[in-house]
Length: 611
Ligand code: FES
Image 1 (tube, protein in one colour):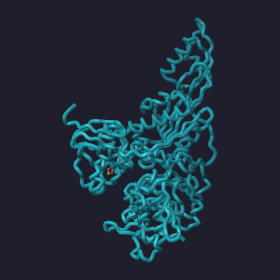
Image 2 (cartoon, rainbow, N blue to C red):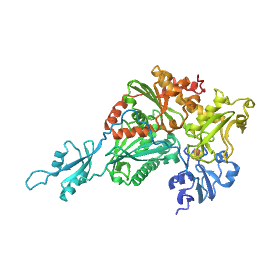
Image 3 (tube, helix red, strand yellow):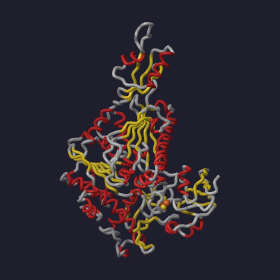
């Protein structure tokens, strides 16, 4: 082994790798396939990538002094993205059994038709006699008129007929023959669909012979080690072709592993899974297909993928799917309006609804907004940033075990609920919205988001929570466990930026059509975040431009609509074709160049007054 290489051992994973001098523990973790939560993508900005050094040395950096207390540094805690080993190192990466809130069910509006493109045709061919002047491929074409096929089908046909069999089953996608199966076995056909989110992944195994759902699966996106948001991953993947392959392989092998898990649990052979349909934002889809995303990281943010892309399982590198099986990537509208948005449109049936005014909002790091004005669809995306997913918030975390996920006012105090049965360790997006709504309601902060200067005027419970730490005001949610969980003045500012971006985006789309929020027949909240938030508090905290409490009854969650939508196009080939055509008619409003957006955004930074 070269002297310049350093060995890093990950004790609780029993992995060990060699890295070059100057590389970090986070680099080593990526090489070893060890997941370390790193929301800021290794820039030293979030302080979430803590690891414990059990043996060996690293030089303590300024970022580590900022995020870790002297006692923690003394014990050996470091930030993986900043810790550069000076020699061989043994590391313990935090390994938590988490109860993630991952939503894998969504609502489908309208009737779901079962008419998949994938199907079977049973074929029986006569025995050919000497001098008959026919070929087996000619007979196949007679039996399946208009069918297309490639060399692999001719080879299968030769093998079947050479063994004396005269009956076989053709597995077909539309008019294309995928494979020929001996005999006419009643084996079912299966397919899988996935929603690849930046943070989480959800998928479903479907029996395409009956249309029934067989099993579902969900997990955190393992690309999280490359940053919590799409921009971190675009940056990483754009640096070199090795990086692109690296991050692309992570998601392909994770999807492969999840398909395998679904097959094993259901007792199904991967060879009988003939297609995979994938929803996801433009970056997730391009990375899944191994396509360079650097154009998505710079103006004018142009996407390579377009109106629905068909690939083969073997070219993507999937092993747990029929190799010639189709991999379909949902249509993409723009660089930041991807196949997750079009899948949500399909789930909500927005492109078939001509009688209603509907707004669909998918709240996340990137807020996607779609307005259906009696059949005319306008869409926009707005950069909300990662605050609502727990990043950039001092005690922020994902919706995992220990996250405060709900708060309510109770007499003269605030009640907080947290995921799991332990003590609060941080706060996730839904908890943050609730807490801010409660602080507004109680008067702890004003419309500008500033803390009260009269804490003594509050009841004891609330008063004791208003504190000053290191010169900054904060509202303490929990101090009972080992962690101090609070919302600081800076956190409120981050929240205002995120909520303001979403509210301003909605207002711009409504204005373009001369509409008001109160005129909408329906407001549909898509995504896991929309499902877990308290709608009244979301309006109170300014995430949605509700003018009165009367609007609240028209707001509903449609859950993981991206997964429901991709399943709809998998099961209904006419819905897929219609969506591909309708997507061409969607008007994309580019907010980053919209002259009114900045003004609207500044106004939306103020918390609203709701009548
Ligand atoms: S500080 Fe290390 S990943 Fe953010």
